[in-house]
Image 1 (cartoon, one colour):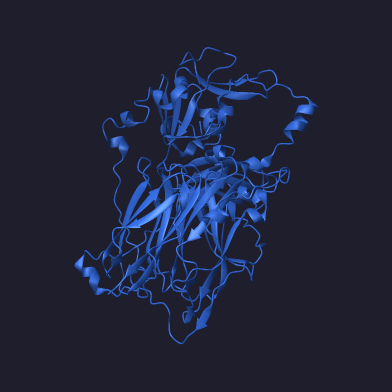
Image 2: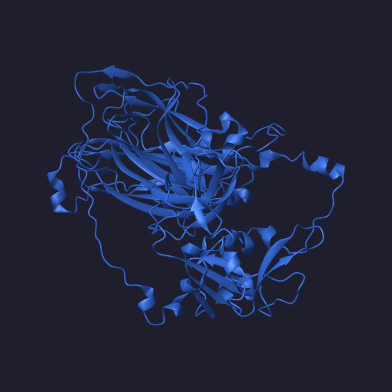
Length: 587
């Protein structure tokens, strides 16, 4: 249902009712503010030194919470130099359950200045630059010291009525294990589940920004005025989107139907370039860097042309400077010593280790076809029976499988099109409006009609076509009309022709790294110098729904002093919560 959408489930003879001019005028006055989504983001510390790691977590809030599952799945986080109007570092992240988290590793030679952390979705840009989240993030010189006011003597400080923090002891020693309990309740004191991030810092090394906003200030929706947004030029993104220009063999832009294949993967799609060769690919889910082949076919299935990648258009850097108080004292000595638990100075990049082996071909294994998701197929068309001289796969199917029909249909009010169905199969009972088969590629369902999918596949890239004509419960009601499953050749990225396969490398979602901290119950950990500024970071703590509690543990570092614990998040009722707590460390 997610891929096909409701429109594809309507009867083939469905025609929408005609609307009069008055109805259209009312429809054009839709209030787009109900679709607004807004990003909030926070970090483990309010400022950094070059060479440190910025740990961050973000939350999305929605003007209409019921639209949460239908809005953006992709968010962009950037470190911005506002003075130079330049994006210094950026990451593309997947939104999961309305949250995301990751990190930036600051270069050792990054110039000290006030940068800004910015986060937004492509769809969120429809609501103006004010809807983009920005926060000042100073990067200091290593000899700069921040003058801070000592934390209060009391243990508890600024506890939230919806979120409390307690500790198993009042005072701890260096390297001692610290256990904290988070307690989350609603306004009537009933336990609730809350998604929380927790950071613990040494208050002597990390001073708070006086004017730094919290999740309570920036998470609530700054709703756009009714009628302020009259169109939505920036589209929703349900996966990794990228754009390019398709050029024919003469290096000229051309309108064409394009096959999109992610190499070394089962992902395959279809897109269309316009008269200027511009195209967009959307909805792919992958991490790190993926390689794509984007080609058009002509004549007897001959692939031609090439695609040139177009970098993503970033949001303009047009936000106001934010004021904050940070008293800096210039010294002659380094103020931060990065421990081996943070960014080690002697870290080395290891060489790649490539392990090669011959894959055991499935065809040589007994009963391998029975392991298909839909079970054993009724008919199999192998590559020797597929005529690669045809321009597309749809033209090779007629006459290959008993009962499989490919024919033209011309219904009143519609353009002529081809349908693919199994005669007398499943619930198929109408010759005028036959129920079509579903098409999968390498066991993955592909959106679109059978004609659109099959006509976009080059027969030379197909290993087998397997047809299941009976009812199949795996795909629900859609599986009652038969399945045509296409399996591509394993050597698709290594064609036999001398012409190399044009490829495009695309950066996908960035993976998050685990926060590393010492375990002093392990005797070998005591041999390292431990002067961490950030003692603990966990962006994904969820309290239990029945009790509203969650526990966490970490170890104190070498230096005595006070640790500042900040827990913030959003509970299951959509309320932002934050709590502050201090821990004493004594020799």
